[in-house]
Length: 106
Length: 114
Image (tube, rainbow over all chains, first blue to last red; front, side):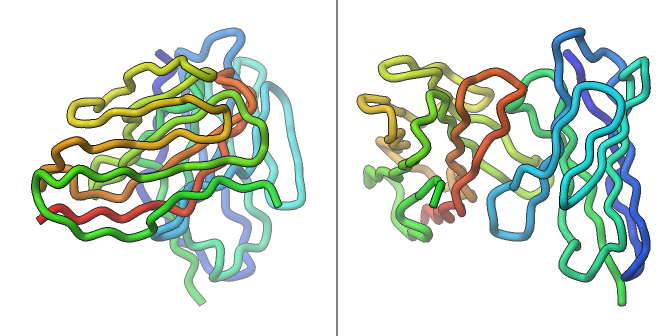
């Protein structure tokens, strides 16, 4: 099982870049890495997904090194509205860990 | 608009009174699933369905039933609810059950069993 490990919480300030790293040492060859965002009392929302190297969309970037044992979600210039829990998933798409609670401060 | 719709959004009921939470998706997705979310325990999968008439247990299936008679609908049934089933429930769907297909989640149903 490609269990994921990520920090329980992080604090940042508005306008800063936030990087959340997730380790998945046992990731299998066919596994993708998927990140979700969840606001209180809402369902998780897909942010970004990647297999290797770098993926970028309008919301975030995902960096995956060659060994794929970790990945980093990068949120550019965060705002207060980015305060949420961020989940990293590898292997089975439905195994959610505790996630990282990001607090963006003014 | 592509969405997963759950009903009701909130429900307070009493122990033993059967209830059903409906879930419907309009994206023609094959895979659907139910989760519960509890403080400190994160999201845990209850049941999932790879396609019509195919359902399987997730991590915490006890006390729940599901059915998948149509592709778009995946109701969650609590035959005899108990207080330990008080939780926030989410329905989700994806194109298939493969991990390169992101899941789309509903807005949640908050159940309180007294």
